Length: 343
Ligand code: SF4
Image (tube, rainbow, N blue to C red):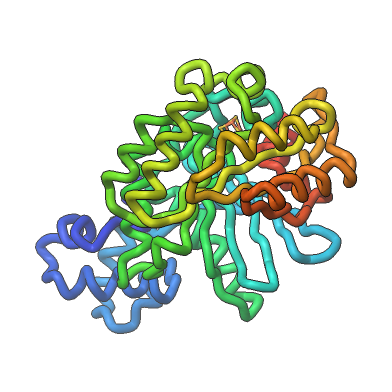
């Protein structure tokens, strides 16, 4: 089996390619990451015999396209990608007025068991490697480039809990940030967590100023435990303290995601409690009207409930936005496409 060079750091490439001199590793890294070359024969600045030797020992592989779904308005595209060992993950490309972003997965399936989420439907298979996560991003970058656009930001908010895959996540982020790779600013990267408090502290200690997004979805422990089992291990008090500490340490405003589910967490009383617990935090709230999932017995909120919730927060000192509905017609909620295709 050929060794895949995609996803290796420059230092790893240098080691892998020994006894070749270091400048060869630099040339090859530029081909892989700057020019998206996947075939050694196209590396024209390498001697022909070296290209032949590299082709016999190595490959440059990102992911296989299994399925593509485009939204009717053309703003959202969801891909199901095939990975080593038969695994499949989803990514979602979003074309906003203010830039283009990709939402990637960090695990195959998810073990966190959030009640409203389709990612749990097929159970948990495995963590993604740093190379696989970087591959999701490069796949998106190539699609955007083909459209004459560029990838502006990355959100790790697809299937999986990224902080459960901490070491590979950090490895991927550091590589993505390298000049010889995409050179992406950490400020253009958002990591979402369902609330693993010790890992939020670990992320703070990495001193990489990515935006932290915390999936809150409830303003009190009782409701949050019912929606998100993680809350039984790390309750709201410790989670909000960890979020506040992250914001103070990095100077980065934390985003609290709040999926509005009809009749569950979308009343004015919920908004009042949410404003109370977030009062004084360097934070803003992203309200997400629930995207229906066939297998889950929840319904979307009414437009009126969304407007009232939003208005309440904004008039009580909490900056809130409503996430524009994107791609409902391509099953944009995480895990939905994978669950539907992999029956
Ligand atoms: S919401 Fe996120 S953490 Fe919760 S089950 Fe879905 S993918 Fe996992």
